[in-house]
Length: 358
Image 1 (cartoon, one colour):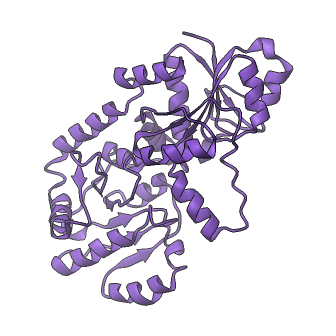
Image 2: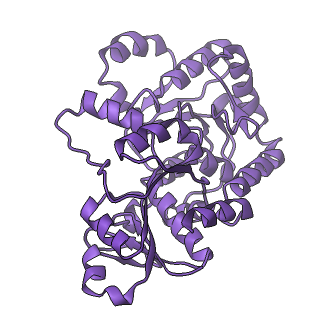
Image 3: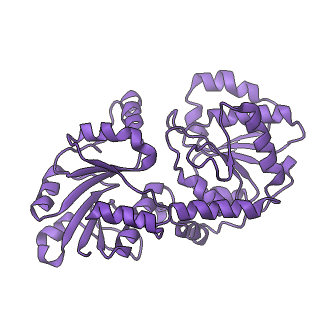
């Protein structure tokens, strides 16, 4: 083992590290690759204030001084560069791959529908040997291969590292979770609301039904990223009036650190489609915050719900709010099991990545 891995991430500045999970994914892979004996460099378009402790370089740095580096694998994850650059690396004996960590079929469809003037060139075909994606985006692999005119693709181990939660606490001053009586606990929904895939609609309807079923609950419903919801006339005119009598707070975009600093005793509801590995769930569970999630692949962990089992979801939400403190020990076991399942130190994940990189 050995040699250099060029990881095309773009510039990751400390202030944006906790605003986009892709940055954390990128640096987690950087650390994993170094564990396997490689020397990693993040490729950026222009040098800047990169997160301390990580090497980075511009493509021109390598071109000017090729003898200083030994690239054996090139992976694009957060930055797409042109085919000429990739082909140049291939001529140097470098394996090239593109790692998609997003629902590209959904992104491509909705980008065309809603942002007609936007040029989002993340499918620069040419100069690639393989396409990689996470197991929870397996349905997108044939599409990605067709876009890039390739027939060789792989599902890669999904990895997540609790070190980012420690960093979140360090940089934002997030306090420990501080439970309230269940009848006064605020419920937060923080879906991005950028598509049907990541939307607050079903969680809002669940809390609406919960407030009617359990009138003794007097907490607030706090909806993050709500400005996007109010772009819909149906939402403004049909749904919002149905929430009258409830304590609803409509908020804009905030980082998880900011939200937890403001609401140390809140509970969360998550609902996403075709995105079973949502790192937000891992973060909240690791911080002891109760989160009701709908991930099928993680259904055995924490509190899980489905829109297809509505009465059950209401009971699980009640049980989560009322009994979370008493079941915190088991919840922490679940959080640790999930963290180990996706840990970059887990031998299963290390072996999977080692095989891919060879």
